[in-house]
Length: 85
Image (cartoon, rainbow, N blue to C red; front, side, top):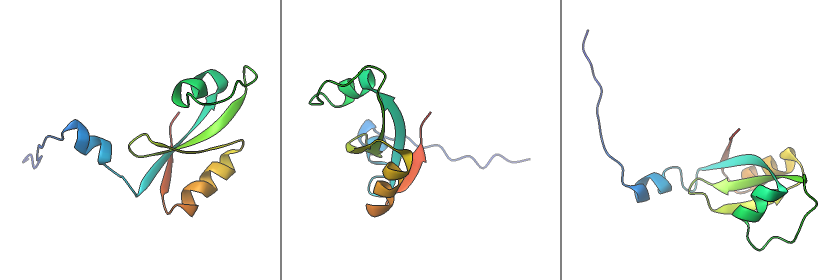
């Protein structure tokens, strides 16, 4: 049996740009998490949950109150959505 593994190193910048313009990730977040990721957010009722869509590099794209709306936002921006749990 042979090992055909190729090793390579990515810089942090290359890793951040991996999937840029092609992949977005979706995540359901509560009000407290949203305040951290979106510092300009107005105060929200504790426990409020929204769906966030982020570019592959972590840049916020949109917030939605339903998963389907965040998914549609990804498709409208020609991005392949992936979910984070």
